[in-house]
Amino acid sequence: MLLEFWAASCGPCVAATGHLNELADRFAGRPIDFVYVNTYESLETIRAFLKVHPIKGVVLADNSEALTNAYGIQAIPVTVLISPSGRVAAIGHPNQITPDVLDRLLANEPVTLARSGNSLTIAVPQRRSLLSVQGSVSSDQYSLVRVAIFPASEITGSVWSKDQFQSSGASLRSLLSFAYDLPLPRILVPSGLEQERYAVQVWVPSDSANALRPIMQTALAAAAAVRVHMEVRDVAALAVEGLPGKLRPSRGGQPLSQCQEKENTGQLTAENSGLEVLKNCIEPITGTSALIPTGMTGIYSFETHWDSSKSGSFEAALRDQLGLQLRPTNASLSVLTVEPVETERMSAEHHRPPADR
Image 1 (tube, rainbow, N blue to C red):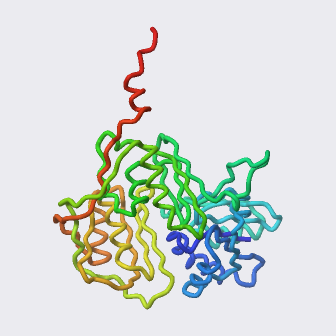
Image 2 (cartoon, rainbow, N blue to C red; image 1 turned 135 degrees about the horizontal axis):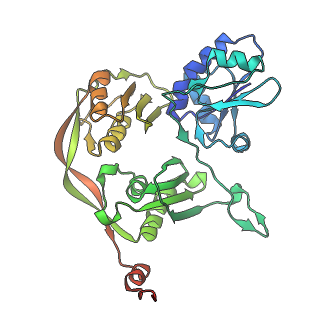
Image 3 (cartoon, one colour; image 1 turned 180 degrees about the horizontal axis):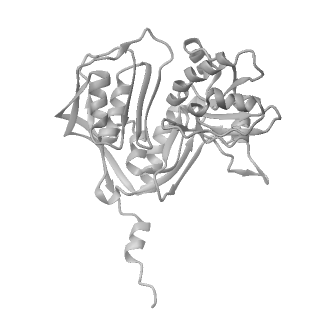
């Protein structure tokens, strides 16, 4: 059995479906099942995706997260190979699964997965039961709202859905960017707070998803002891020129997108998506606000790859693969200004008497 953990909103998962469908065709009639386990999305989202991107295999919705937790899945896509004898033969990225690997699996022989240079993944959002009610751990269905923020030592990235957000390590700037739904370059944090990092877990009921960001705004301000306010400033920006370039017009369908840099490899994949997807990828990579020409709209599909270890590779990929140019300019934009606030706990740190020697 080939067990594939995936999601429709996961760009690397979508990119891998073509390869897996080819394997399913090649091994049709042989004793191997292709089973796709969607880790956290609704049936409506899955059905809409399958109408546009047929998957050759059995598709399951793991709403209880039973399989996801049983196999310890923390990022997707992940492929689990189960031998005819029922043991787990290998766990890896779908790009590592070749016809030879499946031949060895069916022969009940040891399976070794070769390293892959393009194995992008995204983290899986998970809700964990952390409250005790009358001596027992409560079920997630009763944990209606959770807000937890802790200091963190390193940056590990973030993952979210419409009603939850989690990160085991993210900068204060990136957390505020999500909470206020503003691009990272438009979050102005003083140098003294640039190194502030936090682990965050927030969730709200799915029917109150619009409360997620406001709750995070208040919680982050309290945890980091900061005051924030919006203002308009003249800031550096990049004008995106040449649109639509080589972007392919789309007739509509389930919008899917992924922009990720990992292990010197960068990838932007978008299907049935607006130009905001392009803008939202340019800004965190360049660290500068991107400007889409006024009145430029449309739904497109496009893909580009670059070497994130090389300076200028991203800009070159936009130019050569998508026919677009980034021109430096200035623009008056709304920005979020962040200021530290003196608190009792901060004052205590500053005025704490020296320890006895």
